[in-house]
Amino acid sequence: MGGPGPGPETLAWVSWVAVFVSLICYSVGSVLQSIGARRSAHLAGLSAMAFIVVELPYLAGVAVDALAFGLKVVALQTLPLFVVQSILAGVVGVTAIIAHVHGDRLHGRDWIALAALALGLVLVSVTAQSNPAIRIAPTIQLTIVLSIVLPIVVGLIGLRMSSHYAPLVLAAAAGLAWSGLAIASRGISGAPPGMYLLELPLTWAILVHGIVGLVCFALALRRGAVAMMNAVIFVLEMIIPSAVGLWLFGDGVAPGGELWAGLGFVLAVGGTVSLIITRHQLHV
Image (cartoon, rainbow, N blue to C red):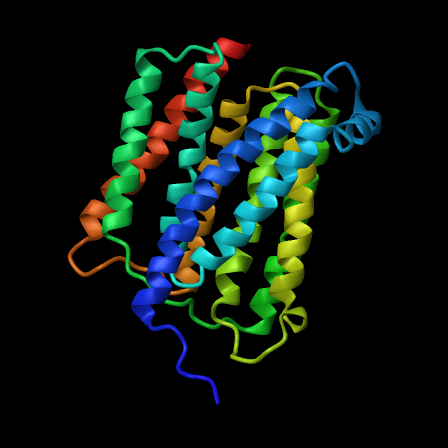
């Protein structure tokens, strides 16, 4: 007979480690995918997609992203969506700093935005309350699966656009898809013990949303700066899943920490939005 499983404190520490390692992996994966995607900038449509997926840097980036996603799912077993999504928004800052090291210089406003983002992540982290998600009904799970229609439609619109806003629209489609993926990942933590994951609609939601997000992100990277693309995606991934987590899964903060958590979330979103604006101005 096996011994008792890990206690709540151990699970919480595992979740914290998982989310910060996931942050590093997502940052590295985004840069690698950007390198692979830019090599197909002279192509269009399906031929571009076929060229991208055989590029070694892109494939390496996808592999690192897969590891990051697995760690994210681990983190969401006990951490609220607004905490995990806010921390992973740090990818915007990390990729901007990586770009700075490679010659894409950051300016005063960029550093202020990065400082706001960092302070926001600290405040969100210290006020978090660790709990599994509340179990949701099968009909709601099915609704999450069917919500994939929205990012598909937005992605098709972006694919047909020829202006410099097309990458933003494609990035928005990826952000919507990965918002659905995050919501489904959090919902799995509330599944009945012993239930096979393949029996859950949320498992299929993770698969479908993940694939659509990956395709839209690859197409967006062909013409946009990686920091700007991540900014668009993570703004959506912060706001939408965080709201759904508070409403649907019973996510919350430690007693007395509501004001600080709210301030941290606003700083994190504001820092990310500022990076969207300043980095986009440099690349149009």
